[in-house]
Each structure stands twice: as C-alpha cells, then as structure tokens.
Length: 592
Image 1: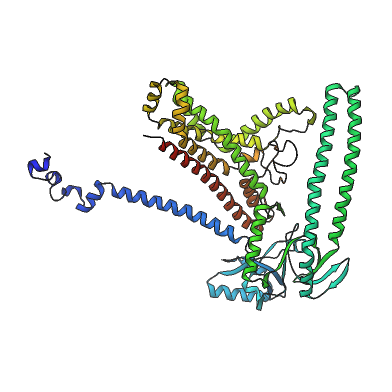
Image 2: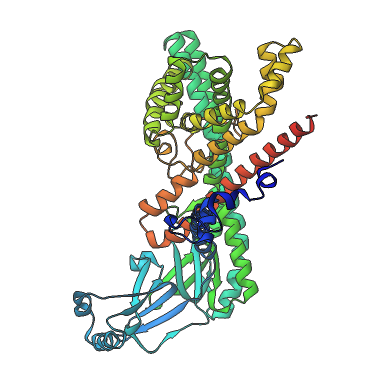
C-alpha cells in the first residue's frame, strides 16, 4: 500500500501543501515548470531553432544566388546627361552615401541632378552595376552608373541588342551590322544577319569540336607515345650507357618511331588547319553602343542570343543549357565562365579515395584500442593524442603531406621506378593520391572515435555468448562485433567524408591547382593516373572569390559552385547513410 493510501494525504501536498513555500518567490505554475526543467527545455529548443534558421538561411542565400547566376538578363541601354552610352546587363542595384570627392568629379551637367537627389533622399544615391563586357575595347567588364546621371528617357531596351558568350575575352554586347562569308558581306539587316548566324553557327560548332578532339585526343596520344619512346631510350641509356650496343639499337628504334609519329602528327595538324580555315570563313560584324565596330569569328562564339526578344520558354531553354554547360564543360575565361566538370570529377574521386583509405586504418586502430589494448598509461596517451589530433589546423596536415608524401615517399618512388623521368617529378609533387592520403590523416581521428563508440555499444553478452560457443577472439570480433558495429563505423565514414570534401588549405599544397583539364582517368594506359594534379570545388571557390581578376563576374559563379559543392557532399552523405540504414535493418532482423 502506497503512502497516499496509508496517510490519506498526497505526497506533494504533504511536503509542500497547496502552495510552495513563499521563500521560493515563484508562482505555483512557474515552480512546476522549473521542477520539470521546462524553462531549460524551451531555451534549448529555441537555441536549436535559431541554429537551424541560420543554417537554412545560409543555404537559402547560397541557393538563391547560385540559381539566379545563370538566368539570362535583359540588355539595357543607358544614356547619361553628358552624352555617353552604356549597353549591358544590370547585375546589381544599391544605395550609398557618396563622398564629396565623388560628387566633385562628376560632370557639371550631372552634378546638379545629383545634389537634387541627395536633398530629396537624405544623402543617399542610387546606382546600378552594369556588365558592359567588350573587354578588348573598354578594358573593363563592369561599370557603375548613377541613376541621377541618366538623361530623361535615357533607359531603353533595344530590340536587336545581342549577347555573345565567347571562349576568350568574356561577353560581348552589340548590334548586328553585317554578316561575312569569305570576307564578303552577304547580309546587312539585323533579322537577316541573325538568321545567317543561327544557320551557320551549329556547323561551325561541330567543326570546332572536331578540331578540339584532334588536338586533345589524337595529338595528345601521339605526344604520349613519343614521350614513352624517349623515356625508353633514356632508360636504356641509364642501364647500359650511351655507347653500348643496346643503346644504339634503342636509338634506331626511337628515330624510326619518331618519324612515324611526326608523319601522323603532320597529317592531324593539316586537318586542324583546314578546320580552322573553314571556321574563319564565317564572321559577324557588330557595332557597340558608342559606335565602335568589332568582328567576331563564329568559331570563337559559344552561344549568342537577342536578350530582349526572348520569351519565357526561350529563357528557360537558355537557362537549362547554361546549367548543363556548368556541370559538364571545362572552365574558361580565368574560371569565371564555362563549366566546372573537372572540379566535380576531382572532388568526388578524391573524397572516395580518402574514404577508402581512412576507413580501414581507422577501424583497425579502433579495434586494437577497444578490444586488444590493455588499460594503462600508453593506451591513455594514445587516446589523448588521437583526440588532440582532431584539433590540429588543417594547413599543418597539408605541410606534413607535402613534406612526407610528396618530398619523401614520392621522391623515393621516382628514384626507384621513374628514374628516366627525372629531374621532372612523377610522384614527387602534388597529386590526387597524396591529397587523398593527406585528408585521410586529417579525418582519421573522426573515424577512430566513431568506431570506438560503435564497438563499445555492442553488448558484452554477445561476446560472451560467442566465447561460450568456442569462438576465438578474432572470430568473435569479425563475425559478431563488427557486423553489429557497422552502422556506427559508417557514421564515422560519413563524418569524415563531410569534413574532407570541404577542406581547401591542405589541398593547396598537395595537388589541387587552378586549372587541370586533363582528368586523372582517361583513355591512356594505365587509364588511372593518381599522380596527376586535379581541380577541386573548394579550391575553385577560393580561386574565384579571391584570385580572379574579374571579381564581379566571378561572384555569381562563386555562389553556384558553393551550392554545387554542398549538393555533392549531401549526395555522398545520403548514399552512405542509406547504406548504413540497410545494414542496421539487416542487423535488427538477426535479433531474436
């Protein structure tokens, strides 16, 4: 019989009565919430909501700017009060407080309008950042235009303002003036010029792609074979000496191979020149807003469109084409335009290699510490060292990877297996393999700690039951403990992939470069080249944001690339979590 039935008085009523003691200084409701910890619960929940709002806000900001970076904008023509004309895309609008020096530097015709706007807005001015392109003519990509500078009716949207995305020099904005074939003008009206451009540009693009294929694949293969023949001759020289009969025979074979390859290269070069001449036949003459003329070869144009004539459906088609180019093509124009496919490929491949390298070592170390090592000073020191290793700055790992992997291990491999290539390093410089191993060391503590926790969560009764059935310690670990701990081990791998995929500082020292169009996997034997440098999305973001000569043009690409990196990390983590969930369900199915 409980205390309430025995005494007839409720325990809480007997202890505190109908109301808490006045010394508490709180109302009964507040005292009850405090007793159950509800204020603390609300504080923790509020902090969690604030953290989620910050994360979602940041992701939303990146996604918003990333998605709108590739959306086609209308082309506006702005005429100022002093008679100058600006043609381009308005990329940003803002308000600011002008300095007296800025106002004094304006033309007299503009100064009065600026002062009038300042008096009406309380010291604020509105301005627009216009992407004017035509860098070879203007030496600038962007220009600020004050709204007070504009003449009456000074904002127009010309019907035949064309935008040209080029392989070099950035974008070009202008009006069609003539279309030439073999230096002969065949059209001088805008609609006829645009029709001829669309008619011939597709054929020119096919010729450019064939020329590109010949340069990269066919000539690249010939150069590779020629280099291999030279290295074989060099190897024979190092082994037998230059005056030896073996070297003379190798020299004859090299000269014969060289003549054959040079003949093939000459044929390919002739075909490349023919394609170049065929593409040079087609040219379009454009006139800028300030009256200058410029001639563009159709082979230099990636795409063109009349921005102010596009319907909503045409804008979506152009937008999707830009997205496909962004994820499938190579960068161009100092990485500020084009695609990021080499960076995507390098990021995914490096992350997978890192995961495959760190997981076995982390699991083995955790198994030894948890299952085999005896508790003592040495084991405690090792655990402390592992935990402290997780707090070492990432650049320190980069310096270690450069000194140990590149200059020590890589240089030794070059001396033993690639002596004929020296002094040019093969493995003695930064590359995909060393970058993956460096990040594996960086994320090793994460895997060790997560695996130890997973092993500790396996009930000892399972181990004892396995021992009772006659199994050895290793058989118990391999057949009983590890399968039960596998979801936790995969959790550690997920965390390591999430951290390693976004690291940039170590990669700057051990393999990531600004531009590496040659992928680590290609058609040349042995098909996988872990010694090559590679591109990485994180380093690409750093290069666009801080090293680009055209920061305003690169800013949209920074957001788009950052969103793509987050998406790739999310996909890799989701895949690992899905595998972990399947293993967990399988383990639960084995319980009885």
